[in-house]
Each structure stands twice: as structure tokens, then as C-alpha cells.
Length: 231
Image 1 (cartoon, rainbow, N blue to C red):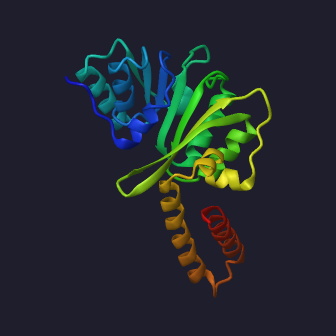
Image 2 (image 1 turned 30 degrees about the vertical axis):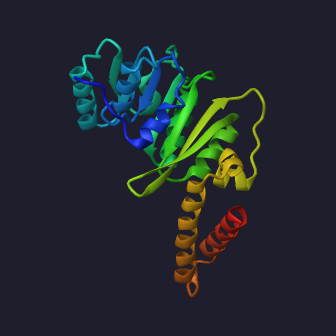
Image 3 (image 1 turned 135 degrees about the horizontal axis):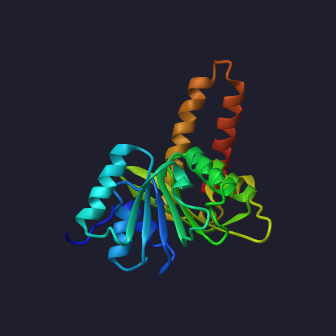
């Protein structure tokens, strides 16, 4: 088989993977990222984890199709439970899941000692990015890079974090919009938050004559924050 080609989103993720160190890709989506990184000699070996039987079998078949069984281990299991406490990986990638699910996977990894302090995290949540950043802050993970990528008419955030020996503190605005994205503010940043602004303004209109006062307050708060960072 020839070399695999990644989607725009996974190509961006691949750029932040630690070179020459093993990778663990959780929820591996046909093992595309591990296959690409091994084929291009960016990592020496990789683990691809799947929690459902169908995706697990597909990932196994893809690895076998590319004759990489000796370098990519496809494992069945939930989150970081596919790793052993003694296993060392340079990077863990968790892409295409909800932010709260990613948070749960990382929390269990810390508790089970399968998430090591020297492992880089590359996270691409589909939502709840603020809650995920709050978890990273609480566990003293410093965000060392952030990116945005548009694919299939949706804009995704990529968060790269590493464990820090110091306490990490981000402001509420930084947790919402990303501390590094706030500094760069690329054009796609404005596109993402202009769309979010319109969504929230629509929600406000729907809530005006209801009893959902707390949701109304929270939505208005986000509208005010978006206007502040977009100005």
C-alpha cells in the first residue's frame, strides 16, 4: 500500500507530535494518524486505541494493509486503559471527541498512572473547550500551543499541553478563548467567534420571555466576552 494522506484536521495535529518518541492515539479513527506518522518516520512506533469493536477491527485491518503490525499496536479498551502504568509514550493524541469525554479519559489516566508527567497531550475537542482547559489548569498542565482548523464547514480547536512544575493560572477569558489563540487572533479566530456570537444572539431571542434566567445570564455573558475579544 502507498502512503496514507491525512485530513486537514489530522495533518495539523501531526505537526505537534513529539518526534522520535512513541505515540498513543486514543479513538484512532482507522489508525490514520499512527500510520501516517510511522510511514513518515516521525515516530518509531505507536499504539492505536479503540473502545468499540467495529472501529477496532477497521484499525487492525488498516495497520495490516500497510504492513505495520510490528510498529503499530492496535488495542481494544477504554481511553488510556490501553496503556500499562510502565509504558512510556512521548505524545498522547485524543481527537474528535467531546471535551467532557476527553476530560474523563485524562482524569482516569492520572488516577491509573497511565498518563505520565513527561507525556505531551494533543487534544482536539469537538466542544466544551473551556471545561477541558479548566481541567488542564487544575492539574498543572501548561498550554504550549493552540491552533484552529476548518474542515467540513466546522472550525476545530487544537490544544497542546505539557505537565508543569509550577501552578498554572488562566483568566476566565483565556479559558474560554484560549490563552495563545487570544495572543495570535488569526483570521479564523474571528470567523469562529462571529459564528458563535450569532448563535448566542439567537439563543437570547428564544429565551427572552422564558424562565431560564441563569441560561440567559450565561449566554449574555458569553456575548459580552465575544464582543470584547473581537473588537
